[in-house]
Image (cartoon, rainbow, N blue to C red):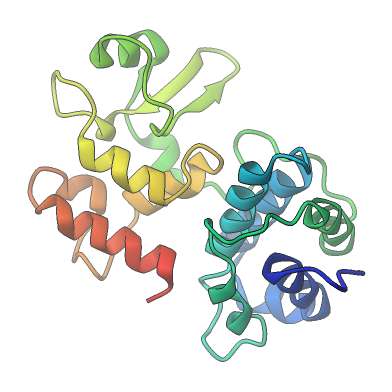
Length: 225
């Protein structure tokens, strides 16, 4: 894959391609499915949309934070930041080439990627109308929402206080960090999985822990601490 002359994101894609077997070996099936989904997101953006490129590159970076610290791709992650400048339009083509290498037979990702945890599928959810009513209008774009071919959009219910009320403000903050608008399944997995930093499942700790602790745990993930 030719990424010569590219910036940090291009170099990251080149390393993924160079060490693709080691990347696959280091990630479990669910983590690898998330990586492929985020690469597909990058491959699908408009190259001239600098912010979309940056956000999609950040999504790829987040998917790779599960790599061991001694992995040959790991050192390249710190250089890829959402605010990094200038944007790298050519990485969109690089992502398409990389997808051909990593998963040549893979079809475009559905809304629900392979390996989606059962906890996400079983979690209570609100309909689009219910979520909009709780928000007093259009739901914020940072909320996690899934497309359901049979029932329209679904919003995981943990994002709202029990019974009534608009979304937790800390949910909006954390979802923004986790890029929930481009990877809702990955963000939902963070909320609904056990977290050793917090000593429990983040969604179950809403309203019980100070907001700053939830934000701190999400920031640690994003920053790779």
